[in-house]
Length: 88
Image 1 (cartoon, rainbow, N blue to C red):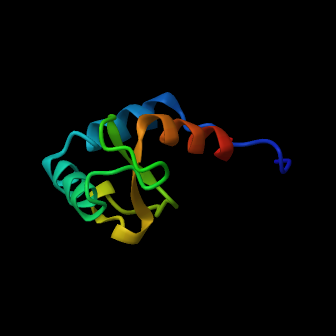
Image 2 (image 1 turned 180 degrees about the vertical axis):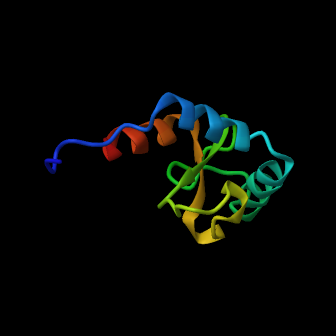
């Protein structure tokens, strides 16, 4: 595979991962991240926008709620979208 080519996650795996994000254990972890970050986007400081959890890096082979706290950060929807665009 060339350096510019990226592997795409198959739709079935994406669906399975989305199901895991509905698990109460992930929801609890998500709230812990928001509380740790004082319910504010860690990029722009927004507190009045939809907040999301961003993976600074992925840890393969573990459940979403088992990912280390250091790997997760609170971002608003706009900043999260920008991070994803840069990653591609």
